[in-house]
Amino acid sequence: MTEDSGSGLRAALGGLTTRGRSFLAAGIAAAVCAYVLGQPDLLRVGLLLAVLPLVCVAVLYRTRYRVAGGRRLAPSRVPATSEARVHLRIDNVSRIPTGLLMLQDQVPYVLGPRPRFVLDRVEPGGHREVSYRVRSDLRGQYPLGPLQLRLTDPFGMCELTRSFSAYDTLTVVPKVEALPAVRLGGEASGYGESRTRTLSLAGEDDLIPRGYRHGDDLRRVHWRSTAKYGELMVRREEQPHKARCTVLLDTRRPAYYGAGPDSAFEWAVGGSASVAMHMLERGYSVRLLTDTGSSVPGPDGAGGADASDAAGIMLDTLAVVDHSDGAGLSRAHEVLRAGNEGLLVAFLGDLDEEQAAIVGRMRQRAGGAVAFVMDSSVWSSRESRESQDPAYPALPLPGADAGDGETRNGEIRARRAVRMLREAGWTVLQVSAGDVLADLWQRADRYRSREEAGTG
Image 1 (spheres, rainbow, N blue to C red):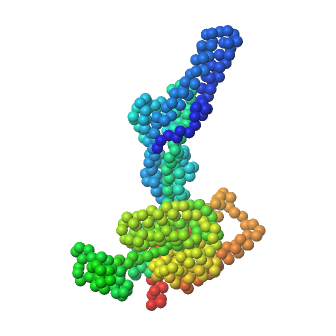
Image 2 (cartoon, rainbow, N blue to C red):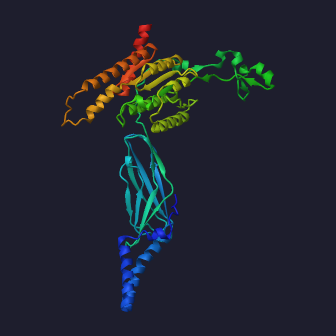
Image 3 (cartoon, helix red, strand yellow):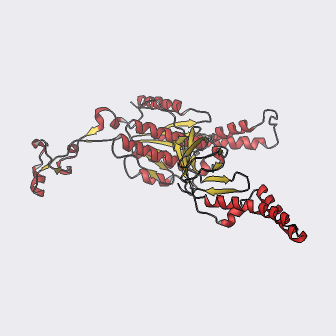
């Protein structure tokens, strides 16, 4: 990173400190008085006072390109509530030592106070390294920089601020919760020997042979394709069939109550990240889908590098996901109708009967379906209790029955939506404020086992 050329000499003159301006004004005043009074000695003093700050400005202006800086994040992607360390390095690329340097980095207020450092003297060709920590409770992508360097002269006459052109981005991803290993519906094709299928099961006409390679077994030669292509062709080896999982995140703005790190929407985002990472670790091909129809596909292969890349892409997506203005889940339903999704895990906000019916139809194309439904009536009552000052308890007011009636209507609507989803074959869990995803994940497995036992 090199220093920005920025302003010219006029900006450098604007960097005069109060002391420098005072010296300049005193020098000009002394020179005027010497001219009026005819005192040459006073004129010499006035010229000295006026020239000194100007010389300091010229020296600083000439040394503005002699310093290079860099920034390094460790790590560049951190979970919410975790700390990252930012390392700054200043190199003196000139042949003369620097004076006093004041270093300042531009940091969003969400990450903490703006860091400032004072560097005394950097020898020619030398460098200095400093570091500071940043932390955020809110997910997102935050720019760090540009780095600002303030140069001062030994007399304190002038201070010049120069900004470096480059900046870095710190990505704060949702906090991922470790989940227990359970066996949910739709996973039968993803475990043990059943995860491997041969293409020959689809019939010989569906085979896609490949060219013969040295060392291939001659018993695998496909003679019909050999005659067709005029070269030796062999049947492909057995292809592993990866189990698939789709994580559906409902981002509709009207479906959630409140905001902030403890809101229902943030719980749903963190739950989506936890489930996606858990299924990737178990070898699934995972796709993240939102109500808008946009999706982040998982890796096609089972390699660790591909899974790692997919995890990074999905975490980066969830770090910046926000509420959508859409009012329905029909776009997500259209995406899911394209094929068999294997296991479908949904994090849903408030549902009316129409949206519950759409979600119910999503179950038709999934081998297993688990829904975590946010109970906004419970979340809203909890946030109201937490915001209430204990020293001033709420008093019953006229018209309070109307609010209670609205809460009861919301509870009735939520129970009706849950019943519709369960009738459609979903394993449904209602989420209240303070619930732990790992406990709900195990409870979903127990509910599925009961449903299979009841239907068996």
